[in-house]
Image 1 (cartoon, rainbow, N blue to C red):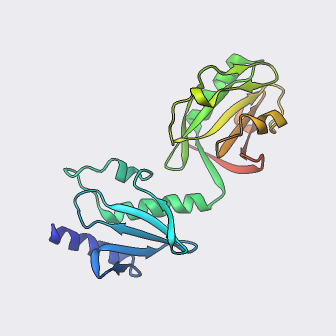
Image 2: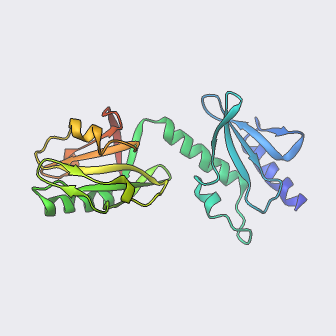
Image 3: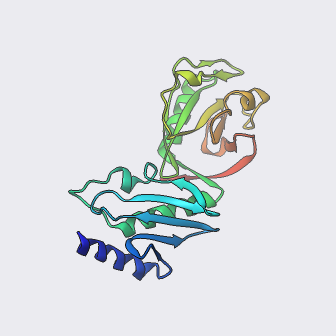
Length: 220
C-alpha cells in the first residue's frame, strides 16, 4: 500500500509542482486552485476512497466526496488515480466559475415536444444536474397547470441533491418570469428555464432564483 501511495504522490507532483504535504505526509496534500480556493485531499487509506474538501480563507468551503463522480463510483477492486480525481474537481470548479449554465440538447428537445403536446396549457419539469450539466428532468407529482400559470408542490418531490432547477413553458410566448414565477416556481432552486411558444431552442431563456438572466449553453 505504501508503494501505491508513493506512486500516486509522484504522479500528482509531476502535474502540480505547487502541491504541499500536510504534516509531512505524502498521502495528505493541499493544492492551490483558483481564486483563493485550496484543495485538500487525504488518500492515506488508498486504495480506499480518499477524503476531499475545499478550503477557502482557512475554513472548509465545500466537502466533495458526494459531488465527484469518480468518488461516488469508487471501488477498491477498480481503483482510480488520485490525479484523475483532482482533475475532475478542477474541471467542475472552472465550470462553476464561468457564468454559463449547461443543458443537454436531448433534454431540451424532449421537453419542447411535451410543451407542444400540452399547448395551450403550461408545462413544468424539475431539472436534474450531473457534473454541472442539466441532463434529465422529472415531472413534479400533482403539478397544476393552466393557460396562465403552473404550480407544483415541493413537499411531494423526492429529496434529491441533484435537483438544481426548473423548466416550464409560457404559452403566451413571453420568455421572462412573471411575479408569480418568482414567488413560486423560482423558490428553492438555483436555475430556471422558461420556454416560450412556439417552443423552439430559440425561444428559451435561463434565470437565477432572483430572475436575473443567465447565459446558457446547449451541449450534445
